[in-house]
Length: 301
Image (cartoon, rainbow, N blue to C red; front, side, top):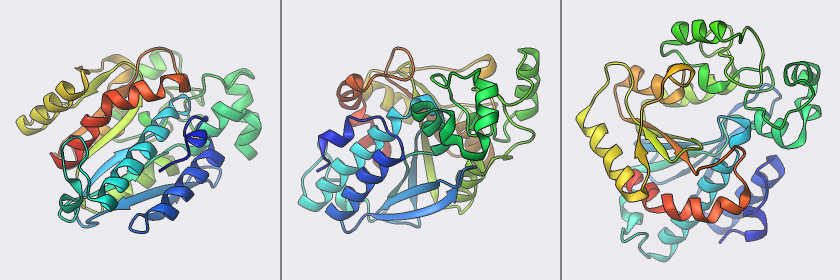
């Protein structure tokens, strides 16, 4: 099981590397791949367990301040793998045999540069340091974007043009700490990486974890699939979260939006926890316990 001293740290690259390293040592059946790199050449990791030809996808840390989602996903992998190794059930589900039919793919941190910048400052942006300092006014505590000042969750081709107009109307014209959608959809290596993985065709449904609000978003545009709505209601019931619908600058351009529009398959945005980003690590246990059953159900639904 993961060292609690590590799980209760801010999830910069050093912490994630240590946690992932521990997981790979403890569970020989867990695989790790690098599926892409960030603007600053930091690896974007993929962890897989079970069937790799048919997978559920969990993704975290699209935004710099939302690094707690990486820790939650790594904690879940640890508990899931322990359940598989010991044959014990998890939330009443014996999940090991199920994973042979449909596996789990987890990208704990889509935006490693953004997380690093938020936690460790502009200097961690390397050649983009000057850009980050200018865009942030020298204060990166609220940084959400990648190193180039592009909000990864505004950079997908799902009503991107409409969202870009809203950004411009709001005065977001170029690189910014948040909500700048880039020059065109998938202009950023981070968004291209996760989109390319989804285009392999192995993903049955996807969950994107953000913070905060304790809400679940499931639909986009004319996508009103009854099965996806049922899944959202089950996840909401198990967690106590609400089913919501984003509006304004929070609607369009996101990974979940792109996935449902592109593949016409279920995808969900899960806004974990409540409060002000970045959520304090003291909230970690409470958040995890609240979503634990939902995560198990999301794998087997």
